[in-house]
Structure formats: C-alpha cells, structure tokens
Length: 194
Image (cartoon, rainbow, N blue to C red; front, side, top):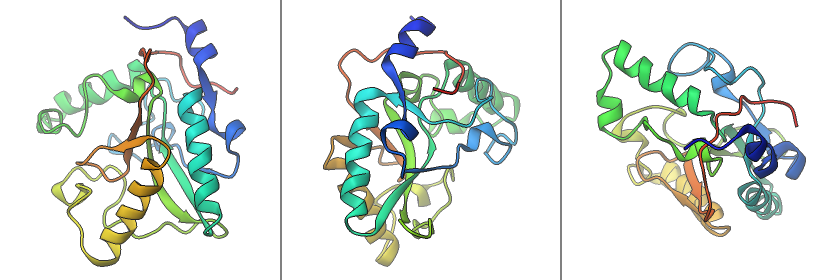
C-alpha cells in the first residue's frame, strides 16, 4: 500500500534544510544516469528522506566535517513511479539480469525515504574520494568488499561513518545505505521543493 501524499509531506524532510553542508547531485533528475532519461517524479532536483534518516545523516556530516570531509548525495527518497520506470527500462532493454542480481529493486527502500546513495568528498573542494567505481556501476567491482588499497580504505571510512549513526551498507553497492525506521511505508509523491 502506497501512503498518501499528505503522509509523505509530513514524514519526509529536505536534507538541505536539515544539513545544508551536504552536497547534492540528484542524478535521476538529469539524463546523467543509467537509463539516460530523467526518471518520472524527478522534476525537481532535491534530496528528501524520512526525517529520522535526514537527521542521522546530518550527524554523519558533522562527524566528517570535524575531519575536513563531507558527504555528497546522488539519491534519497525515490517515488514509486521512478522505481517502476527503472524496472521497465530493464525489461525494455533486455537487462533483467540487473533485477535478478539485486542491483535494481522492484520495491526499494528508497521508496520509503530510508535509503540514500552517497559518497565521501573533501569538505572544502567537494572533490570525491576514489571509491574505485562510479555511482551505479552494476558490477562485482562495486561490491563494498571488492577493493584493495586506498579504495578499500575509503569505502571502509564511508561505511564506518554511516554505521556510527545507524546506517547499514548494501554490500553489493558501496554507495547505498539504509536506515531503520519502524513504520516505513512507500510513497509516490513527486519530488518537490520543501
């Protein structure tokens, strides 16, 4: 059951209002993503999360900032219609293996506003840390543990920073983290300014 838009507006928060120093590059609001198209529901490039998750992310940012680092988010809350468009893209392009292998979900925690895709950056310059693969590279190289040297250290730094505030990494995607909220429900509210 998809929650009403009024519930989404009450439970979601704009990350920019909770933690304005977190950088944002909302890829699905542009053509710069694996589908090559703006996804339905992404008419506005804004990152929303359940308020509890947004506040926890703000605490991660504060911890990192003390060390000259910060976060950059590519995706947070994702309307159900966008997830359905991703699934349709997989089916249309003959890439259903991405669904079978768990890289693209038919039902996503992003739809509940409790999942976030992000990376580490230098706080001042915004330069991204070397994580070994780009965001949304659907291959074994993106599995969090499949790295050595500096890349492995950077991935662990991100995992530890996020875990300190209750986020869990999805082991097949170094950039994907979830936050547990007891009453999480999916929403289909299109992204909008808060």
